[in-house]
Length: 317
Ligand code: AMP
Image (cartoon, rainbow, N blue to C red; front, side, top):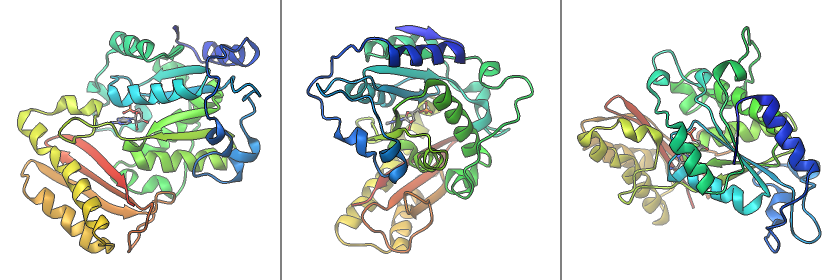
């Protein structure tokens, strides 16, 4: 596995992947999803993913953007990338522009060596771990703003967050030129923002969304779970309980947003250390609120558990 610190190295690797020989280890794999794109309009289908060969092997480049402190949620993304792409890069970058002034940028967990070991064990070919000045050269003043979407859900409580995310992910996409980029459904609103960006900028790559990986008791894995002290860790289960409860109500036929939100609120009411930020049912593509939950509606919650902000969600059936 190679480790790159500069954008130029990452770009050279990506170009080499395209022109160099193909490992060809992916024969027989089903790449049909790669050419059609998921949940996106004609932009990705027509601009296409040209690297699939008649024998089923490919030259696809997969990118897994992360902020490091890797856990099994990240590992699942790397595995998904490995299963579909001949070349896999994982980026490790704690992106300062997506943190607000009073947020946890300074104390965000960092574990570079363990991250490299995990990425290598899951089959990554390259790590990209730039310094802040590499991604934001002195005087950097170019940002990517996905208007509208960026002000909803987490964007409403974390002003500037999605602008920071879109900017850094655009930079990563421009440098690595991936065919597929892998993200977790855990950050469902982030996926909506990035899909809009990819479509608007005609980046011609596919955003692949991977399921939420959870602890045995339901808590979604997150690098921020490390902040929780024992009582908080116990009460943090309220997020996944609320999600499961709402999913169960929908399965039984309840579709009214007000009723579902109130039911979720009751789950949180029993936990004094938990303060709800939002409980929302929205269209997953636009993040606009819906009054009636339909198949594909995003149910999302965010809550402060002590001083730690956690999120969870489900795509409703
Ligand atoms: P982060 O390092 O927190 O920025 O996350 C990097 C990527 O991993 C994002 O696409 C997240 O959605 C994804 N991710 C984080 N936690 C999980 C999880 N529990 N299950 C699946 N994907 C996750």
